[in-house]
Image (cartoon, rainbow over all chains, first blue to last red):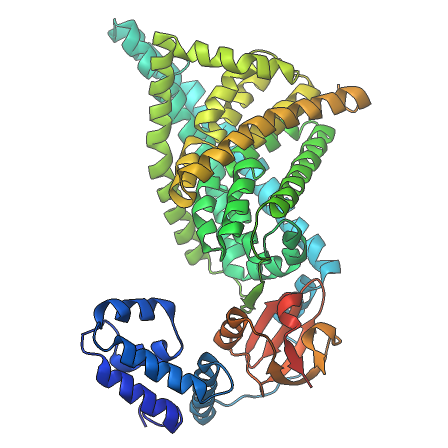
Amino acid sequence: MSIGSDTIYDDTIENAIKGIEASLEKDYIISKRALSLLLLQEDEDSLEEIKEREKENYLKIISIVEETKNKYERPLTFVISSYRQKYAKTLTDNVMVKTETNKKSFSETLDKIMLNPITGVPIALLVLYFGLYKFVGQFGAGVIVDFLEGNIFEAYINPWINNILNDYVSWEWLRTLIGGDYGIITLGIRYAIAIVLPIVGTFFFVFSIIEDSGYLPRLAMLVDRLFKKIGLNGRAVIPMVLGFGCDTMATMVSRTLETERERIISTLLLALAIPCSAQLGVILSLLSGEPKALLVWLIFIVVVFLFIGYLAAKVLPGEEPLFYMEMPPLRLPKLSNVLVKTYTRMEWYFAEVLPLFILISVFIWFGNIIGIFSVLVNIFRPFVTAIGLPEEVSEIFLFGFFRRDYGAAGLFDLVKGGILSARQLVVASATLTLFVPCVAQFVMMIKERGLKTAIYIAAFVFVFSFFAGYALNWILITTGALV
Amino acid sequence: MKTLANIEKGFEGSIVEIKTNRDDIIRKMMAMGVFPGSSVKVIQTFPSYVFQVGYTQIAVDKEIADTILVK
Protein backbone atom coordinates (compact mmCIF):
# COMPACT_ATOMS: atom_id res chain seq x y z
CA MET A 1 0.00 0.00 0.00
CA SER A 2 1.45 3.34 -0.93
CA ILE A 3 0.72 6.63 0.70
CA GLY A 4 -1.63 8.66 -1.44
CA SER A 5 -3.41 5.56 -2.67
CA ASP A 6 -7.13 5.86 -3.39
CA THR A 7 -8.25 4.35 -0.15
CA ILE A 8 -8.07 7.54 1.91
CA TYR A 9 -11.27 9.35 0.94
CA ASP A 10 -14.78 8.29 -0.07
CA ASP A 11 -15.98 8.14 -3.69
CA THR A 12 -17.57 11.59 -3.72
CA ILE A 13 -14.32 13.27 -2.74
CA GLU A 14 -12.17 11.04 -4.93
CA ASN A 15 -14.38 11.86 -7.94
CA ALA A 16 -14.22 15.57 -7.15
CA ILE A 17 -10.43 15.31 -6.97
CA LYS A 18 -10.35 13.56 -10.37
CA GLY A 19 -12.62 16.22 -11.85
CA ILE A 20 -10.47 19.09 -10.61
CA GLU A 21 -7.22 17.37 -11.57
CA ALA A 22 -8.49 17.01 -15.13
CA SER A 23 -9.38 20.70 -15.28
CA LEU A 24 -6.01 21.94 -14.09
CA GLU A 25 -4.07 22.66 -17.26
CA LYS A 26 -1.01 24.49 -16.00
CA ASP A 27 1.92 23.10 -14.01
CA TYR A 28 2.17 23.77 -10.29
CA ILE A 29 4.90 23.29 -7.70
CA ILE A 30 2.74 20.82 -5.81
CA SER A 31 1.05 17.80 -7.34
CA LYS A 32 -2.37 18.28 -8.95
CA ARG A 33 -3.91 15.95 -6.41
CA ALA A 34 -2.56 17.99 -3.51
CA LEU A 35 -3.73 21.20 -5.13
CA SER A 36 -7.19 19.73 -5.76
CA LEU A 37 -7.48 18.81 -2.10
CA LEU A 38 -6.48 22.33 -1.07
CA LEU A 39 -9.09 23.74 -3.45
CA LEU A 40 -11.78 21.50 -2.00
CA GLN A 41 -10.89 22.86 1.43
CA GLU A 42 -11.21 26.38 0.00
CA ASP A 43 -7.67 27.36 0.76
CA GLU A 44 -7.48 31.05 -0.07
CA ASP A 45 -3.99 31.13 -1.56
CA SER A 46 -4.71 28.20 -3.86
CA LEU A 47 -8.02 29.69 -4.99
CA GLU A 48 -6.30 32.92 -5.85
CA GLU A 49 -3.58 31.18 -7.79
CA ILE A 50 -5.91 29.17 -10.02
CA LYS A 51 -8.16 32.19 -10.53
CA GLU A 52 -5.18 33.85 -12.09
CA ARG A 53 -3.73 30.92 -13.98
CA GLU A 54 -6.68 28.73 -15.01
CA LYS A 55 -8.74 31.39 -16.71
CA GLU A 56 -10.84 28.99 -18.75
CA ASN A 57 -11.50 26.27 -16.24
CA TYR A 58 -11.73 28.42 -13.13
CA LEU A 59 -15.53 28.48 -13.04
CA LYS A 60 -15.73 24.76 -13.74
CA ILE A 61 -13.40 24.02 -10.81
CA ILE A 62 -15.36 26.30 -8.50
CA SER A 63 -18.59 24.54 -9.43
CA ILE A 64 -17.06 21.12 -8.62
CA VAL A 65 -16.02 22.48 -5.21
CA GLU A 66 -19.50 23.91 -4.56
CA GLU A 67 -21.23 20.73 -5.66
CA THR A 68 -19.05 18.57 -3.41
CA LYS A 69 -19.52 20.96 -0.51
CA ASN A 70 -23.30 20.64 -0.75
CA LYS A 71 -23.16 16.88 -0.43
CA TYR A 72 -21.86 17.07 3.13
CA GLU A 73 -23.35 18.48 6.27
CA ARG A 74 -20.01 19.50 7.67
CA PRO A 75 -17.31 21.70 6.11
CA LEU A 76 -15.04 19.85 3.68
CA THR A 77 -11.97 20.71 5.76
CA PHE A 78 -13.56 18.68 8.47
CA VAL A 79 -14.50 15.75 6.24
CA ILE A 80 -11.11 15.56 4.58
CA SER A 81 -9.23 15.86 7.88
CA SER A 82 -11.37 13.10 9.39
CA TYR A 83 -10.48 10.70 6.56
CA ARG A 84 -6.83 11.57 6.91
CA GLN A 85 -6.97 11.03 10.65
CA LYS A 86 -8.54 7.61 10.12
CA TYR A 87 -5.95 6.69 7.52
CA ALA A 88 -3.10 7.85 9.75
CA LYS A 89 -4.52 5.78 12.58
CA THR A 90 -4.61 2.58 10.50
CA LEU A 91 -1.01 3.24 9.46
CA THR A 92 0.26 3.79 12.99
CA ASP A 93 -1.81 0.92 14.41
CA ASN A 94 0.10 -1.41 12.10
CA VAL A 95 3.52 -0.32 13.25
CA MET A 96 3.18 1.05 16.77
CA VAL A 97 2.78 -0.72 20.08
CA LYS A 98 1.82 1.28 23.10
CA THR A 99 2.81 -0.04 26.49
CA GLU A 100 1.00 1.37 29.47
CA THR A 101 3.12 2.34 32.42
CA ASN A 102 1.69 3.53 35.66
CA LYS A 103 4.95 4.91 36.90
CA LYS A 104 5.05 8.67 36.54
CA SER A 105 8.21 10.00 35.02
CA PHE A 106 9.99 13.01 36.47
CA SER A 107 9.12 15.17 33.46
CA GLU A 108 5.41 14.38 33.88
CA THR A 109 5.54 15.46 37.51
CA LEU A 110 7.43 18.60 36.57
CA ASP A 111 4.86 19.25 33.85
CA LYS A 112 2.05 19.03 36.40
CA ILE A 113 3.58 21.55 38.75
CA MET A 114 4.43 23.94 35.92
CA LEU A 115 0.84 23.88 34.64
CA ASN A 116 -0.81 24.39 38.00
CA PRO A 117 -0.99 28.14 38.60
CA ILE A 118 -0.35 27.79 42.34
CA THR A 119 3.03 26.22 41.72
CA GLY A 120 3.49 27.44 38.14
CA VAL A 121 3.52 31.17 38.86
CA PRO A 122 6.26 30.89 41.52
CA ILE A 123 8.24 28.73 39.07
CA ALA A 124 7.86 31.40 36.36
CA LEU A 125 9.09 34.03 38.81
CA LEU A 126 12.03 31.80 39.80
CA VAL A 127 12.94 31.28 36.14
CA LEU A 128 12.88 35.05 35.60
CA TYR A 129 14.76 35.72 38.84
CA PHE A 130 17.57 33.28 38.24
CA GLY A 131 17.62 33.50 34.46
CA LEU A 132 17.27 37.23 34.03
CA TYR A 133 18.24 38.86 37.30
CA LYS A 134 20.98 36.56 38.57
CA PHE A 135 22.52 35.33 35.35
CA VAL A 136 21.95 38.16 32.88
CA GLY A 137 21.75 41.07 35.34
CA GLN A 138 24.39 40.17 37.88
CA PHE A 139 26.70 37.81 36.03
CA GLY A 140 26.45 39.20 32.48
CA ALA A 141 25.92 42.88 33.18
CA GLY A 142 27.89 42.79 36.42
CA VAL A 143 30.84 40.45 36.47
CA ILE A 144 31.60 40.19 32.76
CA VAL A 145 30.90 43.83 31.94
CA ASP A 146 33.05 45.01 34.86
CA PHE A 147 35.87 42.82 33.71
CA LEU A 148 35.75 43.85 30.03
CA GLU A 149 35.12 47.50 30.80
CA GLY A 150 37.46 48.04 33.71
CA ASN A 151 40.18 45.48 33.16
CA ILE A 152 40.38 45.54 29.38
CA PHE A 153 39.08 48.77 27.88
CA GLU A 154 39.73 51.33 30.60
CA ALA A 155 42.97 49.75 31.75
CA TYR A 156 44.52 48.93 28.37
CA ILE A 157 42.71 49.71 25.14
CA ASN A 158 41.48 53.26 25.76
CA PRO A 159 44.76 54.63 27.18
CA TRP A 160 46.71 52.81 24.49
CA ILE A 161 44.55 54.26 21.69
CA ASN A 162 44.60 57.74 23.19
CA ASN A 163 48.38 57.63 23.60
CA ILE A 164 48.89 56.59 19.99
CA LEU A 165 46.52 59.33 18.85
CA ASN A 166 48.29 61.94 20.97
CA ASP A 167 51.72 60.86 19.79
CA TYR A 168 51.11 60.43 16.09
CA VAL A 169 47.99 62.32 15.06
CA SER A 170 48.16 66.07 14.90
CA TRP A 171 44.62 66.68 13.68
CA GLU A 172 42.24 67.30 16.52
CA TRP A 173 39.23 66.16 14.44
CA LEU A 174 40.73 62.72 13.80
CA ARG A 175 41.76 62.30 17.43
CA THR A 176 38.22 62.97 18.65
CA LEU A 177 36.74 60.79 15.92
CA ILE A 178 38.65 57.71 17.06
CA GLY A 179 39.43 58.36 20.74
CA GLY A 180 38.46 60.70 23.53
CA ASP A 181 35.01 60.76 25.12
CA TYR A 182 32.89 59.93 22.07
CA GLY A 183 35.37 58.16 19.79
CA ILE A 184 34.61 55.21 17.55
CA ILE A 185 36.86 52.93 19.57
CA THR A 186 36.64 54.49 23.02
CA LEU A 187 32.86 54.85 22.95
CA GLY A 188 31.28 52.91 20.06
CA ILE A 189 33.28 49.72 20.11
CA ARG A 190 33.66 49.82 23.89
CA TYR A 191 29.90 49.96 24.39
CA ALA A 192 29.26 47.28 21.80
CA ILE A 193 31.85 44.78 23.02
CA ALA A 194 32.22 45.48 26.73
CA ILE A 195 28.67 46.41 27.71
CA VAL A 196 26.13 45.14 25.22
CA LEU A 197 27.69 41.91 23.98
CA PRO A 198 28.05 40.18 27.38
CA ILE A 199 24.49 41.15 28.29
CA VAL A 200 22.79 39.94 25.12
CA GLY A 201 25.08 36.89 25.05
CA THR A 202 24.02 35.75 28.52
CA PHE A 203 20.39 36.52 27.67
CA PHE A 204 20.39 34.49 24.48
CA PHE A 205 22.00 31.60 26.38
CA VAL A 206 19.19 31.61 28.96
CA PHE A 207 16.50 32.08 26.30
CA SER A 208 17.79 29.12 24.26
CA ILE A 209 17.63 26.88 27.33
CA ILE A 210 14.07 28.00 28.11
CA GLU A 211 13.09 27.59 24.47
CA ASP A 212 14.54 24.08 24.10
CA SER A 213 13.06 22.81 27.35
CA GLY A 214 9.51 23.35 26.06
CA TYR A 215 8.78 25.80 28.86
CA LEU A 216 7.47 28.64 26.66
CA PRO A 217 4.10 27.03 25.74
CA ARG A 218 3.51 26.36 29.45
CA LEU A 219 4.24 29.98 30.25
CA ALA A 220 1.90 31.00 27.41
CA MET A 221 -0.88 28.92 28.96
CA LEU A 222 -0.33 30.49 32.39
CA VAL A 223 -0.46 34.08 31.17
CA ASP A 224 -3.24 33.71 28.58
CA ARG A 225 -6.00 34.93 30.89
CA LEU A 226 -3.98 38.01 31.87
CA PHE A 227 -2.87 38.70 28.31
CA LYS A 228 -6.49 38.59 27.09
CA LYS A 229 -7.11 41.66 29.25
CA ILE A 230 -4.52 43.57 27.25
CA GLY A 231 -5.84 42.42 23.89
CA LEU A 232 -3.27 39.68 23.35
CA ASN A 233 -3.32 35.92 23.78
CA GLY A 234 -0.89 33.67 25.62
CA ARG A 235 1.08 33.06 22.45
CA ALA A 236 2.31 36.67 22.61
CA VAL A 237 4.42 35.70 25.61
CA ILE A 238 7.09 34.55 23.12
CA PRO A 239 7.77 37.96 21.53
CA MET A 240 7.38 39.58 24.96
CA VAL A 241 10.00 37.38 26.62
CA LEU A 242 12.21 37.73 23.57
CA GLY A 243 11.85 41.50 23.99
CA PHE A 244 13.77 41.22 27.24
CA GLY A 245 16.63 40.16 25.00
CA CYS A 246 16.27 42.47 22.04
CA ASP A 247 13.15 44.51 21.29
CA THR A 248 14.17 44.79 17.66
CA MET A 249 14.24 41.04 17.22
CA ALA A 250 10.99 40.73 19.20
CA THR A 251 9.23 43.31 17.01
CA MET A 252 10.16 41.17 14.03
CA VAL A 253 8.88 38.02 15.75
CA SER A 254 5.54 39.70 16.57
CA ARG A 255 4.56 38.99 12.95
CA THR A 256 3.85 35.41 14.07
CA LEU A 257 0.79 36.70 15.93
CA GLU A 258 -2.41 36.08 14.03
CA THR A 259 -4.27 39.37 13.90
CA GLU A 260 -3.06 42.84 12.97
CA ARG A 261 -4.59 44.11 16.20
CA GLU A 262 -2.38 41.83 18.30
CA ARG A 263 0.65 42.79 16.24
CA ILE A 264 0.05 46.50 16.83
CA ILE A 265 -0.54 46.07 20.56
CA SER A 266 2.57 43.95 21.01
CA THR A 267 4.67 46.35 18.92
CA LEU A 268 3.48 49.22 21.12
CA LEU A 269 4.17 47.35 24.36
CA LEU A 270 7.61 46.26 23.16
CA ALA A 271 8.45 49.85 22.24
CA LEU A 272 7.16 51.22 25.52
CA ALA A 273 7.38 48.89 28.46
CA ILE A 274 9.67 45.97 27.69
CA PRO A 275 13.28 46.81 28.46
CA CYS A 276 15.80 44.98 26.28
CA SER A 277 18.59 42.94 27.88
CA ALA A 278 21.16 45.67 27.47
CA GLN A 279 18.90 48.16 29.27
CA LEU A 280 17.75 45.59 31.73
CA GLY A 281 21.27 44.50 32.58
CA VAL A 282 22.49 48.04 33.12
CA ILE A 283 19.37 49.14 35.01
CA LEU A 284 19.34 46.05 37.21
CA SER A 285 22.95 46.49 38.16
CA LEU A 286 22.42 50.21 38.80
CA LEU A 287 19.37 49.67 40.99
CA SER A 288 20.42 46.46 42.71
CA GLY A 289 22.33 48.54 45.27
CA GLU A 290 18.99 50.13 46.25
CA PRO A 291 16.40 47.33 46.65
CA LYS A 292 13.63 49.87 47.28
CA ALA A 293 14.46 51.73 44.10
CA LEU A 294 14.48 48.48 42.15
CA LEU A 295 11.06 47.58 43.52
CA VAL A 296 9.61 50.99 42.60
CA TRP A 297 10.99 50.69 39.07
CA LEU A 298 9.60 47.15 38.68
CA ILE A 299 6.10 48.03 39.91
CA PHE A 300 6.03 51.14 37.77
CA ILE A 301 6.96 49.28 34.58
CA VAL A 302 4.47 46.46 35.25
CA VAL A 303 1.67 48.97 35.90
CA VAL A 304 2.46 50.88 32.71
CA PHE A 305 2.58 47.62 30.72
CA LEU A 306 -0.82 46.47 31.94
CA PHE A 307 -2.47 49.90 31.89
CA ILE A 308 -1.38 50.83 28.36
CA GLY A 309 -2.14 47.31 27.10
CA TYR A 310 -5.61 47.53 28.63
CA LEU A 311 -6.24 50.93 27.05
CA ALA A 312 -4.91 49.81 23.66
CA ALA A 313 -7.22 46.78 23.75
CA LYS A 314 -10.16 49.08 24.48
CA VAL A 315 -9.29 51.60 21.79
CA LEU A 316 -8.26 49.33 18.91
CA PRO A 317 -11.13 47.77 17.00
CA GLY A 318 -11.13 44.08 16.10
CA GLU A 319 -11.97 40.66 17.42
CA GLU A 320 -10.70 39.19 20.65
CA PRO A 321 -7.85 36.79 19.94
CA LEU A 322 -8.16 33.01 20.35
CA PHE A 323 -5.63 30.98 22.26
CA TYR A 324 -4.67 27.45 21.27
CA MET A 325 -1.29 25.85 21.52
CA GLU A 326 0.21 22.45 21.31
CA MET A 327 2.30 21.63 24.36
CA PRO A 328 5.37 19.63 23.45
CA PRO A 329 6.73 17.31 26.12
CA LEU A 330 9.31 18.80 28.47
CA ARG A 331 12.84 17.97 27.41
CA LEU A 332 16.26 18.44 28.86
CA PRO A 333 17.96 20.92 26.53
CA LYS A 334 21.08 19.69 24.76
CA LEU A 335 24.07 21.87 25.57
CA SER A 336 25.44 21.74 22.01
CA ASN A 337 22.10 22.95 20.57
CA VAL A 338 21.87 25.72 23.14
CA LEU A 339 25.40 26.88 22.35
CA VAL A 340 24.84 26.85 18.59
CA LYS A 341 21.63 28.87 18.97
CA THR A 342 23.27 31.36 21.32
CA TYR A 343 26.19 31.74 18.95
CA THR A 344 24.00 32.25 15.87
CA ARG A 345 21.87 34.84 17.63
CA MET A 346 24.90 36.69 18.96
CA GLU A 347 26.43 36.68 15.50
CA TRP A 348 23.23 38.15 14.05
CA TYR A 349 23.02 40.71 16.80
CA PHE A 350 26.64 41.71 16.60
CA ALA A 351 26.57 42.13 12.83
CA GLU A 352 23.58 44.38 13.37
CA VAL A 353 24.79 46.30 16.40
CA LEU A 354 28.46 47.03 15.75
CA PRO A 355 27.98 49.12 12.58
CA LEU A 356 25.19 51.05 14.33
CA PHE A 357 27.35 51.82 17.34
CA ILE A 358 30.15 53.02 15.11
CA LEU A 359 27.65 55.11 13.17
CA ILE A 360 26.34 56.61 16.38
CA SER A 361 29.86 57.53 17.50
CA VAL A 362 30.47 59.20 14.17
CA PHE A 363 27.14 61.00 14.38
CA ILE A 364 27.86 62.26 17.87
CA TRP A 365 31.33 63.33 16.83
CA PHE A 366 29.92 65.15 13.82
CA GLY A 367 27.11 66.63 15.89
CA ASN A 368 29.61 67.95 18.38
CA ILE A 369 31.57 69.67 15.63
CA ILE A 370 28.65 71.38 13.95
CA GLY A 371 26.80 71.99 17.20
CA ILE A 372 23.54 70.20 16.34
CA PHE A 373 24.19 67.91 19.23
CA SER A 374 23.98 70.70 21.78
CA VAL A 375 20.84 72.00 20.07
CA LEU A 376 19.18 68.60 20.50
CA VAL A 377 20.38 68.32 24.08
CA ASN A 378 18.86 71.75 24.67
CA ILE A 379 15.54 70.50 23.32
CA PHE A 380 15.60 67.60 25.77
CA ARG A 381 16.78 69.69 28.72
CA PRO A 382 13.45 71.26 29.81
CA PHE A 383 11.77 67.82 29.70
CA VAL A 384 14.58 66.26 31.67
CA THR A 385 14.61 68.92 34.37
CA ALA A 386 10.81 68.87 34.53
CA ILE A 387 10.95 65.26 35.70
CA GLY A 388 13.40 66.21 38.44
CA LEU A 389 16.65 65.07 36.85
CA PRO A 390 19.96 66.92 36.58
CA GLU A 391 20.76 68.50 33.21
CA GLU A 392 23.52 66.03 32.40
CA VAL A 393 20.88 63.34 31.87
CA SER A 394 19.66 65.14 28.71
CA GLU A 395 22.69 63.81 26.93
CA ILE A 396 21.71 60.27 27.89
CA PHE A 397 18.26 60.73 26.48
CA LEU A 398 19.82 61.76 23.23
CA PHE A 399 21.96 58.63 23.25
CA GLY A 400 18.84 56.66 24.12
CA PHE A 401 17.22 58.00 21.01
CA PHE A 402 19.77 56.13 18.94
CA ARG A 403 19.81 52.98 20.97
CA ARG A 404 18.03 52.40 24.23
CA ASP A 405 20.88 50.27 25.52
CA TYR A 406 23.34 52.97 24.56
CA GLY A 407 21.38 55.41 26.68
CA ALA A 408 21.23 53.04 29.62
CA ALA A 409 24.94 52.44 29.33
CA GLY A 410 25.45 56.20 29.44
CA LEU A 411 23.48 56.30 32.66
CA PHE A 412 25.95 53.80 34.02
CA ASP A 413 28.78 56.29 33.48
CA LEU A 414 26.83 59.04 35.26
CA VAL A 415 26.06 56.91 38.27
CA LYS A 416 29.68 55.98 38.64
CA GLY A 417 30.26 59.72 38.85
CA GLY A 418 27.77 59.72 41.75
CA ILE A 419 25.55 62.64 40.74
CA LEU A 420 22.13 60.98 41.02
CA SER A 421 20.02 60.43 44.14
CA ALA A 422 18.00 57.23 44.54
CA ARG A 423 14.81 58.98 43.43
CA GLN A 424 16.48 60.53 40.40
CA LEU A 425 17.97 57.19 39.52
CA VAL A 426 14.55 55.50 39.54
CA VAL A 427 12.91 58.29 37.55
CA ALA A 428 15.74 58.27 35.02
CA SER A 429 15.71 54.46 34.70
CA ALA A 430 11.92 54.32 34.39
CA THR A 431 11.68 57.13 31.85
CA LEU A 432 14.55 55.70 29.84
CA THR A 433 12.93 52.25 29.89
CA LEU A 434 9.74 53.73 28.47
CA PHE A 435 11.45 56.17 26.14
CA VAL A 436 11.38 56.02 22.35
CA PRO A 437 12.85 52.76 21.04
CA CYS A 438 16.30 52.62 19.56
CA VAL A 439 16.85 53.43 15.91
CA ALA A 440 17.07 49.76 14.96
CA GLN A 441 13.74 49.00 16.64
CA PHE A 442 12.12 52.02 15.02
CA VAL A 443 13.31 50.88 11.61
CA MET A 444 11.93 47.41 12.32
CA MET A 445 8.60 48.96 13.39
CA ILE A 446 8.37 50.76 10.06
CA LYS A 447 9.24 47.58 8.22
CA GLU A 448 6.72 45.41 10.06
CA ARG A 449 3.84 47.79 10.83
CA GLY A 450 4.19 50.49 8.18
CA LEU A 451 5.40 54.08 8.46
CA LYS A 452 2.17 55.59 9.76
CA THR A 453 1.66 53.14 12.63
CA ALA A 454 5.36 53.30 13.52
CA ILE A 455 5.28 57.09 13.76
CA TYR A 456 2.08 57.07 15.84
CA ILE A 457 3.60 54.57 18.24
CA ALA A 458 6.90 56.45 18.51
CA ALA A 459 5.15 59.79 19.08
CA PHE A 460 2.93 58.28 21.75
CA VAL A 461 5.89 56.64 23.49
CA PHE A 462 7.87 59.90 23.45
CA VAL A 463 5.10 61.96 25.04
CA PHE A 464 3.97 59.25 27.42
CA SER A 465 7.43 58.41 28.77
CA PHE A 466 8.05 61.98 29.93
CA PHE A 467 4.53 62.32 31.25
CA ALA A 468 4.88 59.07 33.18
CA GLY A 469 8.34 60.09 34.43
CA TYR A 470 6.85 63.35 35.65
CA ALA A 471 4.04 61.53 37.43
CA LEU A 472 6.43 59.04 39.02
CA ASN A 473 8.70 61.83 40.27
CA TRP A 474 5.71 63.67 41.71
CA ILE A 475 4.43 60.54 43.47
CA LEU A 476 7.84 59.78 44.93
CA ILE A 477 8.26 63.34 46.20
CA THR A 478 4.73 63.63 47.60
CA THR A 479 4.76 60.28 49.38
CA GLY A 480 8.38 60.65 50.38
CA ALA A 481 8.94 57.04 49.31
CA LEU A 482 12.38 57.77 47.93
CA VAL A 483 14.61 60.76 48.40
CA MET B 1 -24.35 18.25 26.98
CA LYS B 2 -21.05 19.02 28.66
CA THR B 3 -18.25 20.99 27.07
CA LEU B 4 -14.57 21.06 27.95
CA ALA B 5 -15.21 24.41 29.59
CA ASN B 6 -17.57 23.06 32.23
CA ILE B 7 -16.08 19.74 33.14
CA GLU B 8 -13.89 18.76 36.04
CA LYS B 9 -10.15 18.19 35.94
CA GLY B 10 -9.25 14.53 35.46
CA PHE B 11 -12.28 13.75 33.26
CA GLU B 12 -11.71 11.02 30.70
CA GLY B 13 -14.09 10.46 27.82
CA SER B 14 -14.51 11.19 24.18
CA ILE B 15 -15.21 14.19 21.99
CA VAL B 16 -18.74 14.29 20.59
CA GLU B 17 -18.67 17.36 18.44
CA ILE B 18 -16.95 20.66 17.78
CA LYS B 19 -19.91 22.97 17.80
CA THR B 20 -19.17 26.32 16.25
CA ASN B 21 -19.77 28.36 13.12
CA ARG B 22 -16.27 29.68 13.21
CA ASP B 23 -14.21 28.11 10.47
CA ASP B 24 -10.95 29.19 12.06
CA ILE B 25 -11.66 27.23 15.24
CA ILE B 26 -12.59 24.10 13.28
CA ARG B 27 -9.48 24.38 11.14
CA LYS B 28 -7.23 24.79 14.18
CA MET B 29 -8.72 21.87 16.02
CA MET B 30 -8.49 19.64 12.92
CA ALA B 31 -4.86 20.64 12.49
CA MET B 32 -4.09 19.49 16.02
CA GLY B 33 -5.98 16.23 15.65
CA VAL B 34 -9.03 17.10 17.73
CA PHE B 35 -11.90 15.12 16.12
CA PRO B 36 -15.30 13.85 17.17
CA GLY B 37 -14.75 10.32 18.43
CA SER B 38 -11.22 10.95 19.73
CA SER B 39 -10.67 10.06 23.35
CA VAL B 40 -9.86 12.99 25.55
CA LYS B 41 -8.41 13.53 28.99
CA VAL B 42 -8.73 16.83 30.86
CA ILE B 43 -5.48 17.79 32.55
CA GLN B 44 -6.16 21.31 33.69
CA THR B 45 -9.04 23.78 33.76
CA PHE B 46 -7.46 26.91 35.18
CA PRO B 47 -6.08 29.42 34.17
CA SER B 48 -6.55 27.83 30.73
CA TYR B 49 -7.84 24.46 29.57
CA VAL B 50 -5.28 21.75 28.92
CA PHE B 51 -6.33 18.39 27.54
CA GLN B 52 -4.79 15.38 25.91
CA VAL B 53 -5.94 13.87 22.63
CA GLY B 54 -3.95 10.90 21.40
CA TYR B 55 -0.32 11.70 22.07
CA THR B 56 -0.86 15.45 21.91
CA GLN B 57 -1.34 17.88 24.78
CA ILE B 58 -3.23 20.98 23.82
CA ALA B 59 -3.93 24.23 25.66
CA VAL B 60 -6.94 26.34 24.67
CA ASP B 61 -8.87 29.29 26.10
CA LYS B 62 -12.47 29.32 27.29
CA GLU B 63 -13.76 30.44 23.86
CA ILE B 64 -12.49 27.27 22.21
CA ALA B 65 -13.14 24.97 25.19
CA ASP B 66 -16.79 26.05 25.03
CA THR B 67 -17.14 24.61 21.52
CA ILE B 68 -15.83 21.13 22.32
CA LEU B 69 -18.66 18.84 23.42
CA VAL B 70 -17.61 15.74 25.36
CA LYS B 71 -19.17 12.70 26.97
